[in-house]
Length: 461
Image (cartoon, rainbow, N blue to C red):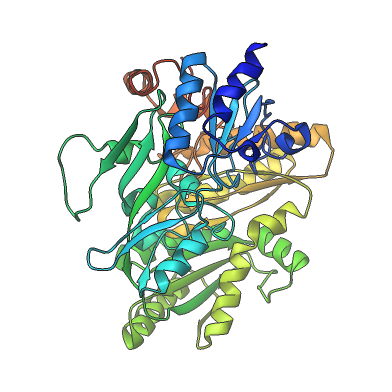
């Protein structure tokens, strides 16, 4: 009996036969995540465990035989973090979707990793509670993926990113052992923050099989405002002024290129001939929210906004947010696309968005810039004609230019999408040698045989 067949038979002892997939046509659909610009390998099988015990059994076999394992959720990642590896296993947790507990007294939910962000938010909403992190992909991204990448979202300017919501995790380690990390209490400092270390580790330290997430009371209906600018740099200067005096629950930016793409793809009434738009929300109740938004719009006018208005209609506000969430698919519809994800100090935001426009000109590519302006997190997306290899090379050069730009202004090469494959070559430019060595030691301690998502997320050594 050949080794591959024997190993798969070992796996099949723990999983239902229907949860062990080797059919090439099905395997192909699980080779890649949603990103572009990186190449995926061919796994020997895609596995669909349904319980923590099954994940543990899979990892024991993989550990014994030194088989690479790529954890996967919904496959919505944008950096190649869940791209398959030749000869490895893809361990997909999409069938682990149960909400295990909603603790209304202590304000947390325990959930399996495969549930979509929107589904979890709806579930806890039925209990009068709210899960704050809300990536633009919330309708098709999983909680496990959110934990693995430390996902952010439109509300993170006020409520933080996924790590700020994680109280505890259940994690299957590389050798199949299961550990519970974190706590149930609001406060707790016993030992190192191992749960926080797993968040954002992109599956290189373990496979998350349960997340205990902090919940908040449902916020009141938000008050929404819009400020329109003739150029994107003025919008960047307005953001700096706004965040000095206010903490809105949302502060988003869209440049002209992005708005034009959205209007071309699905007309939404955006001012597509303007240079940039800021969208702001306050979830303070009633008159307090209106006053906060009015103050922000007044500051925007002082920084060059030529049109401002506060929405009085909840449907209109939802349409505006919907238009913002359509930025990626709208740009994707324009041609081949390559999405970046950088974060810069708010004091350098105007400089950064101006430099991105210059990069687009210098590299002769189209770049649509949008993102979470309130925390300096930008998603400049490069679009080139489909199948144009020369343009694709210019796009990759522009991508690298923007990573260099982020570091030059004191920022980071990724704000919320992670390193994956795409940004690994640049990670050493951000981490100094001692930090790189610490990463290596941590990886070796958690995964001594190097089987968990090898070649992803970490600096090269």
